[in-house]
Length: 195
Image (cartoon, rainbow, N blue to C red):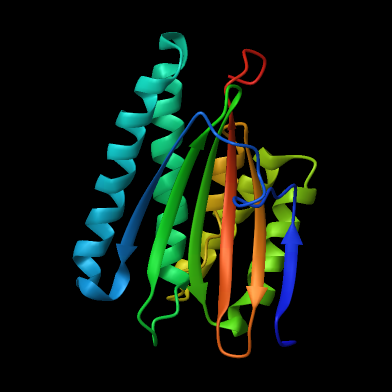
């Protein structure tokens, strides 16, 4: 991997460069401070909490959808951060939620081993460039079942599940000599057309 390289996949808006938000909040989880079992439980509870709280700030007609979609998005992204986080180092998973009038943006920042970045790029490009997300979902389900029979766990279904809920995904990956900082952005539309 090249030193200090930045890769952008999809329609990414940097959190620092974006417009001012109507409301924002940040949740940080220190992955090394608790055991793995508690971390898995905590990501689900954290996601549920965020879904419940943030659903209060949207139109009441969209409350249920936002609670459900936000919970699902946060669970998938935090789970990926745990699974692909840099286990050899102390790292923090940061989740920023930012509300604009027409969109809820979820940023999840994680540190990863640079050797894992090519696989992330391949997976991200595959799902963003597919013409039929449901067909891809079925294909990946079959592949996951086959891998499970071989004792492997590699489904790549999380991102696909997010996209199937009319959520847009993008990534910014900053690669240094020893660590890659991966920021995943999920954009949840609040407009009538998409909601």
